[in-house]
Length: 112
Length: 111
Image 1 (spheres, one colour):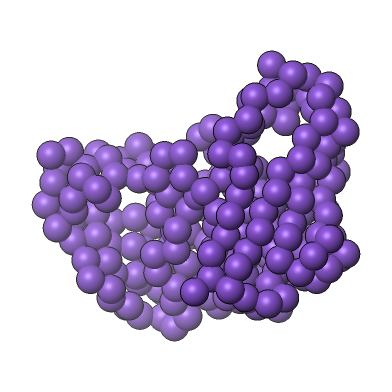
Image 2: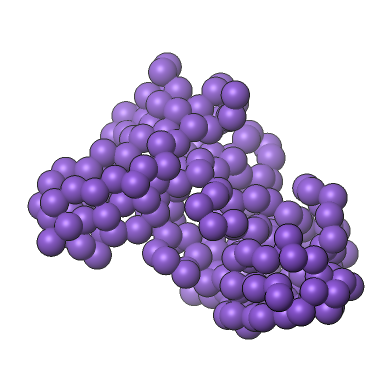
């Protein structure tokens, strides 16, 4: 069966520090991969998605970037965090378009 | 107008009641419909996935789709305190890798 791992679960970072969040999927090949941010009391905001290694689509221009160095690995990064980067970051995978997405348990990021 | 509208609640009902959660959408290209449940501090988990108009049942959960009205519903029968969570509807645009989510309805089942 397929599983998705996200780490860390919780992260507290100072403003201006770098960020690297990692997501890996097991049990499937060539998945579509997604990064979302969920602000408190608000919906899911799509940040990036990838349909293959090295292929990244950005939905919202901002302080973050994404990379997909391997088929089942998706990384969310920032060189300098802003206060507004605080939130709950979720990774998801999908076998094909129109199929459900399956989510990891997220990383709660607090910027001080 | 948002593509998907969902009442954010909060919605509180007594244990054992029937719960009705709803979403409306404006894009007629939406053909597939999903319901996710999200517990606090967890990622959303898929509850129901439907394509056709009509009803789909899975245990205590029933998903209903009315494409002519662009309206979908999730019914929970014999609600339990463990059903307390935020429920999100989601729809993929045909041929598009992206999902459009509702903002979620926060549900509390009171013992």
